[in-house]
Amino acid sequence: MAQVSLPSGIKIEFEEFGLRSDPTVLLVSGFTSQLLGWDEGLCQELASTGRHVIRFDNRDVGLSSHLDGQAVDVEAVFNATFFGGDPVEVPYTLSDMAADAIGLVDALDCEVVDAVGVSMGGMIVQTMAIEHPGRLRSVVSIMSTTGGSGVGLPTEAALEQLLMEPPDNREEFIESSVGAEVWSSQRHFDPQRAREKAAANFDRMFYPEGATRQYAAIMVSGDRTEALKSVTVPMLVIHGWDDTLIHPSGGEATAAIVPGASLLMLDDMGHDLPEPLWPEIVTAIVEFGDSANAHTFVNT
Image (cartoon, rainbow, N blue to C red):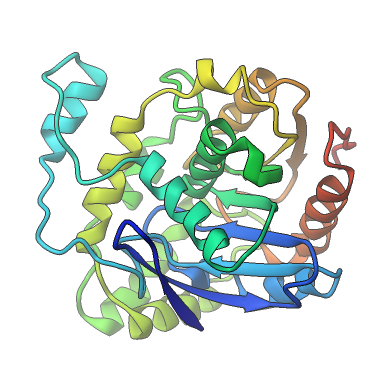
């Protein structure tokens, strides 16, 4: 792993797989997710197809820059976003996080990339397509949404689990990870694997403070629907039918609004990337990146 310092002063921790001479796939993580959220096995599988794969920590998570002490009034942000309250200043937005991602590929001299994002990462790659289209060959938005108020809504149980304050005791943190079953693949969820991943994340970096600022960035960035109507970058949308954290309507709405976008809906996938589905997901990413234009997939 390595780190780059961006002109903004933000430091980004990243890891590479494959050769830089190959087409680059930039993997963008979701809300509070470290780069470990992109399983090493999945990264290796992508690299084996002749891809230069980058996974990285977003700001405020993992080993990238932490904006320590920059408080956010989440209630005020919520009121401003949904009830017309007074605008609230926040430390950063999804646009800033998209600029971080572009800054990383600039630092690594990657000319154009296939940007692949999950959940909040999907929101970030959508923002990259809106604001930095010339830097992208394709975009793959996975288990994400447009930011529109009527689509992609979580179930009450999934939202409650997402916003639950994580235990700061290692063993309790590890055990709490099985709560992710509420939004995961109904067929493939493995509680022991969830515990192993939680242990690796806790040991690498436990930093719950960043969650509030990332959540605020999502909320204040608002609805991308109108901006997505003008996207010219080829986009593939992937979503799982089991997803209860971002309802499949979020993916369907994204594909419907982006000109020429393709939609791949997967059985047995929730708000996760189950290993049995990696071959199908990797093939979709690679084939879509190679075509770099609208591509029709048959749902299975």
